[in-house]
Length: 153
Image 1 (cartoon, rainbow, N blue to C red):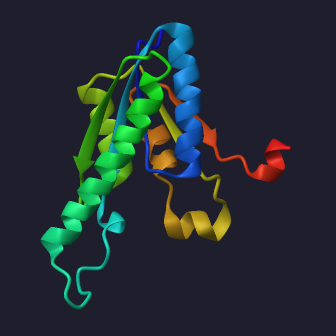
Image 2 (image 1 turned 90 degrees about the vertical axis):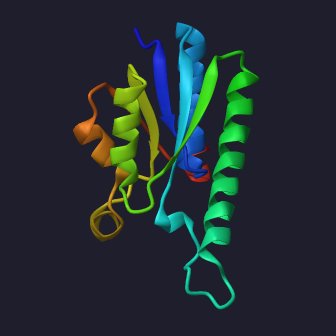
C-alpha cells in the first residue's frame, strides 16, 4: 500500500515523533523511507552580522542539515528499513512546496510530517508548512502532532 514513505524532518520534536511513526509504519509494511530536509533562509543566521561571510553561513547551514539527515538516516537504518536522504536548498522558497515537489519526483506513496498544532494568532503569524502539505499533496499525508511531556503521562 505505502511502499515509499517521504518523511520531512527539521530537527524539531514534532519531526522526531513523525519519524518514529514513519519507521514503525515502514517496518510493518516493508516500505522504504526517504528523509527530506529543506534548508531555508530561516535556518541561516542574519548575513549582516559584523564579520560574517554569507558563504560561511550557508556552508554552516548545509553542514547542520547534513548532520541532521545523517542522524535520522542512522536511526532508520538501525531498524533495518531501507532509507535514503535528500537535502533541498530553497533559500527563498516555502518548505511545504519543496516537500510536495520531492513527493512527486520520487514518487512517494505517503508523506509523513510533524506538526506543532499551533492555533489562532501564532498559526496566522508563523504559518503552517504541514497545512500547506495537506492541502496540496498528491498523496495521503500522515500528520504527527507534537506530544508534550504532560500529554505523554
